[in-house]
Image (cartoon, rainbow, N blue to C red; front, side):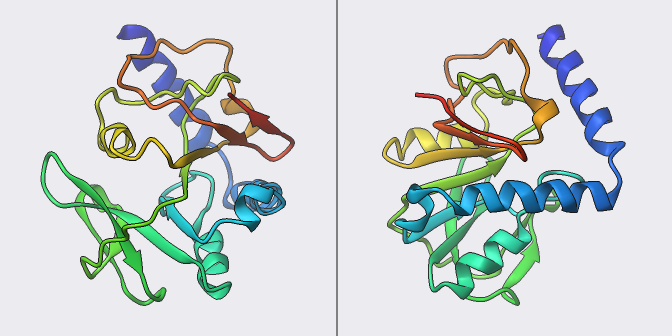
Length: 184
């Protein structure tokens, strides 16, 4: 547990030390790599986290998917136990939800989910990620094992080892500014 805390602290410090220009520049490269994937080109429904702070910037990706007529849903925490994928109909239908996470204003739940996209703090090449263990995301995806799980990360966030718990969802793909890692 101390190991996870130390890694989390180090990664947050590195991420927060990045300038806005660097975040947007690297994020644009990551988005470009993501949009080249056949899995993305062929998918119609996306579950994506709206980034905050210096996470890999996802707002432009969300707008791109909406402009292409794709079904886009964002997480919405309904109570301490449940997170749902709420469909976003247009960019103006957003609000700050629990933990200052941007989410849709309406509870229009998306039934069909093909791809999940989430900015991550740290990952291994095997797709193990620095999760919170039994967190909202892990519990949500356990209910949807068919969903392709894609992590967005900066190159420096790929680490050799992470202590994971059995509940931590392993990612299928990792997209960074310089590479695409297929984890399975």
